[in-house]
Every structure is written in C-alpha cells, then in structure tokens.
Image (tube, rainbow, N blue to C red; front, top):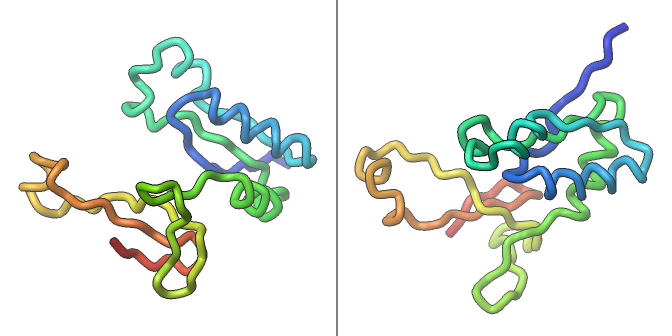
Length: 126
C-alpha cells in the first residue's frame, strides 16, 4: 500500500515550515516538506514555485489540521487587537486571497482593498 500525503499549509520560507513541522511531529503526526531544498538554495523563486509545502499523512490529516489551527497566526488590526468576525464573532481571521477579475486591479494591485476571511464560518468581509 502506498503512503498518501496531503498539503496542509504552504509557507514562503522553509524556516516557517520547519517550526510547524516540528510541532506536528512532536504530537505524533507524520509530515514531510516539499520544495524545501529548492527554496533554501534560491529564496527568490519561492513565489514562482508556490512556496514550501507542508505535507501531512492522510491518516493524520484531521488531527494535524486541529493542531495547526491552534498555533497559526491570525490577523490583527493596526493596534494589535484581535479582529472579530461580524457573523460568528470568531477571532480566527485570515487575509483572503484576492480574486482579481478586473484588468485594472491586475495592473494596479495596490488600489485593491484588503479582504478578510473567517477561518470558522468562511465569511469574507473588509
């Protein structure tokens, strides 16, 4: 039987991935990193190849996701306070991926406002 792994998270630098990998392995979760050596040898290509991928064995995926959600850094406001979801009042808020459908925002991305997404209820808000 072949071992199956799923991507749990993607990091820009391998040091960030190593910290999370160490925490998961200390909890008994089977993990491995993909593209770590490539990005370590040339960090400027991190965006081009999609960053360092943290892979988790499928048998440990649910447990790993729970542990990762407990330790990950969530978005704060300008004063360092937690941001609350307007729908469920959760503080597990992340910056949402930008959906650039307009050519103007593709050419001038700095005019696009930041959107946030709740990690619990998946509500997107500003």
